[in-house]
Image 1 (cartoon, rainbow, N blue to C red):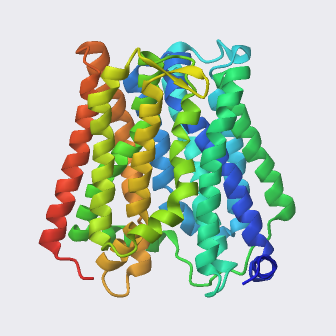
Image 2 (cartoon, one colour):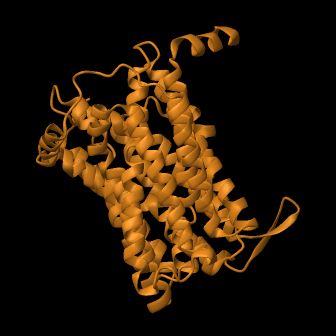
Image 3 (tube, rainbow, N blue to C red):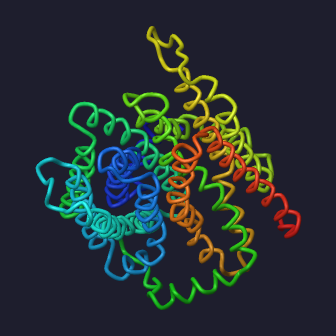
Amino acid sequence: MRLSENIQKLKTNFKSSFWVANGMELFERLAYYGQATILSIFLRDHLKFTEVEAGQLSSIFGGLIYLLPIFAGAIADKTGFKKAFSFAFGVLSVGYFLIGATGMKTFSGLIPESLLFPFLTIILIFTALGGSFIKPSVLGTVALSTNEETKSLGYAIYYWLVNIGAAIGPLLAYLVRDYFGIEFVYLVSAFSCALMFFVTQFFYKNPVQNSASQDLKTVFSNLIKVLTNLRFMSFLLIFGLYWVLFWQFFIIIPFYISDFISLDTPIELILSTGAWTIILFQIPVNRLTKKISTQTAIVIGFALATFTWLIWYFALPVTNGATINLFGGEVAASIPLIVFGIFLFSIGEQTQAPRFYEYIADLAPKGQEALFQGYAFLPIALAWGFGGTFGGWIYQLFTKEIDNPQMIFLVMSGIGLLATILMLIYNKLTKSKG
């Protein structure tokens, strides 16, 4: 098919609400990942919390923003996606502004130091509540503004734009932090969401919604149904261990780079490696692994995640203090090593992520496939809710109390190894069909 025909197909087969919703998701992800890359450093180095406190606050925000969509989706179905988007972007813009304001000289002294932790806790919960309406509203719009022929492409476009936002957001965060200060990153996130609030008002139109949408009573009933499925919950909990490793890129890695490499290191650019890897390599990786079984692909993803942290355990202490000549300048040798590790981790993520949804469909009882897919984000929420606090505690323990930071990477590789072994045992015991 010619390029012109492809472009015409995109114009005619997707409704305007599809493009507006996905464009807004791009800006929301830009705002989210821009602030996520510096949140732990902002909390520790700028607001002077301990690593454990910074991890706890990160856990609250990250855990809720992935857990609450289970319930927010039912509300969005009832109110209409336009109202849900308006609420979400309004809350996000205010929430991000208030988070950044805690670190600004203009507002210094307004919140007593003793009340800063509970104040931020409330603001992070408030912000996560708003953010929880974005994904179900965008995905709901994609579902209702595409047909059977275009649905697959529609979700591919959605996934692509999510990663574009995840790649550009950290870049903007780095530039803003470098020129204006770390607290102003939150102003950029707030502005991005405020802009999308007005886009919602003037450009977004509700698609025709399915009359069979769920109410909250049904959501709670389904949640109990899912939680009591031992096989499914075991799978999600094992997968949660994998996501614990992933979220440490936003907790442990920023702390480590700041403390052991350089305060001037572009942390945001380093952390964007994962998003750029997915953008560039998702299609080739899918083609190379399409003949691998679902179970094998997931185990490979887990193994590469484990290998990433194991490489860092052996190599990072050796490279600390050393420099290499890169692109005509001297660069700390640890930086390319960390970038390579994130790249390797992301290759594993691309290997297993598409198969994750296939696996859930395989696990679901007949007639409950859609219900089980709705809980695909549960291990991510559980991992963030636990992983932030755990990562902060592990980092503080081994750098401040035991003075052996190398052990952090061994602990994380141990978690990855445990997840890999448990998944192999799980596959053998359940003898999953397909």
